[in-house]
Length: 147
Image (tube, rainbow, N blue to C red; front, top):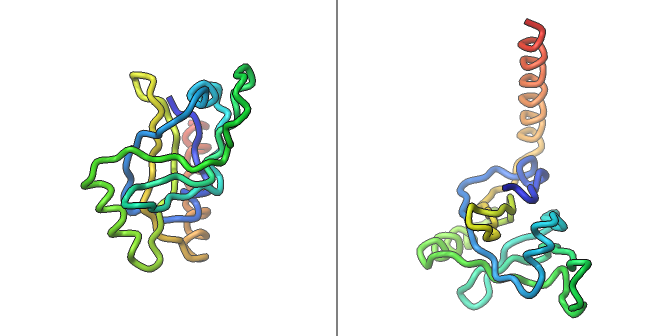
């Protein structure tokens, strides 16, 4: 079940490869995620000590929890295989390549999973092309609905 999607990332970046990672959560953060109190906007992926961390991933405090000590913007460790971590770290060393969270969803077992992407920034003309393609698809859908 999709909880949050970083729509701006799909517009601003060209996704080269994506991965599904688990997130280490504390306390009642999973309840906030289930309540869809999450914002991926402005979040990014960094490396710390040969591990992958999500920064500025905003998970609001659960309103019925009595633990106010959790910071909504704290760094959260991402759980990936060693091979995936090595691939991402290798790609991050290239200029112009970065990694950002794309989607947050719950899997069938109820675990929170973060879809992260290795991305390259789009140029202005690429963004215009995306808008043009989106408008064309919308027009095609309208015409198909008429018939």
